[in-house]
Image (cartoon, rainbow, N blue to C red; front, side):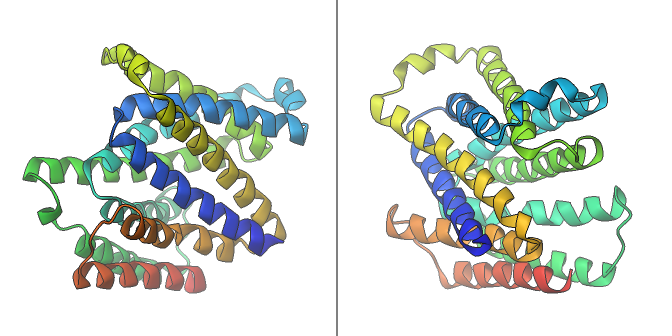
Amino acid sequence: MWLLMALLSTVFSALAIFLIKSIVKRTDSDIAAAMVSCVVLVFAWIAAYVAGSQSTVTYLSNNEIIFLVLSGLSIGISWIFFYKSLALAPLNKASSLYSLKVFFTFISSIIVFSNTSNLLLKILFSILLVAGMLITCKNDSFNSKKEYNSFLLSSFLYAFFITLSMILSEIGAANVEYNLANSIKICVVLVYTWLIVFIKNKRQLVFNIKKVELIHIFLIGLCIVGSYFCFYNAIKYDYYNIVLLINRLCFLITIALSIILLKEKCTVRDIIGWIIIALSLLLIAIFC
C-alpha cells in the first residue's frame, strides 16, 4: 500500500506541475496561483473533515498557530516564485531546478537542526546535485539574459521558501495533524496570493479566464491535494527515505510529459544533467 501511495503522490505532483505550465502559457502566473489556492483550500478542508481533525483546531496553542501561519506565508511566497519560474522557462528546464529544495534541506538540517551526520557525503552529493541542475539549465533556452537570471532567481527563492515552510512546521507545529495543518496553511496561502493580485492591480484579469482554464485550475488543485494526501499516507509505513526518493523523482515524469505532450526538445547535455540529478537523489536516499 505504501508503494502505491508513494507512486500516486509522485504522479499527482508531476501532473500538477505539467498543468500549471500549461495554464501559465495563457494566464498570468499570479492569477493562476491565486485561483489554484481557492480550489486547494476547498479540497484541503474536505480532507481535514474526512480525517476528523477539524474539531481539534480549537485545541491548537498560540505558538502552533503562529508557526502554521508563518509556514503558510512561506508556502504562499514560494508559490508565486514557482508559478513565475514555470512561466519563464521550458518545463523540462524548470522541473530540473526544483530539486534545489533538497540542497536547502541539507543546509537547514545542518544549521537549524545541528544534524552533522554524514556531513561529508551531504556536501559531496549536494555539489553533484547542483552540478546536474546547472548542466541542464543553460541560458540559450531563454530569450534574454535578463529572463534567464529571473528564472534562476525565481527557482532559487521557490526552493528557499518551500524549505523554510517545512522548517517552521517542524519547529513549531510538528504535533498538529497533517490534514489540519495543511488546511490552515492554505488559508494563509489564499490570502497572500490574492493580496499579491490586488497589490499588482491584476484583479481585472480574473474575468478574462476561459472555461477550459478553469477546468485546468480545478485539476491542478485536485492533483496538489492528491499528492499531499498520498505522500502523508505513504510515510505512515516507516519507509520515509524511499517514499521521499520516489516523490523527488517526479521531475523525470514531468520531463517525459514535456517532451511527449509539449514537444519540448532536449539535448545530450540535458540528458546527462538529468541522470546526474537522479543519481544524486538516489545516493542521498541511500547514504543520507
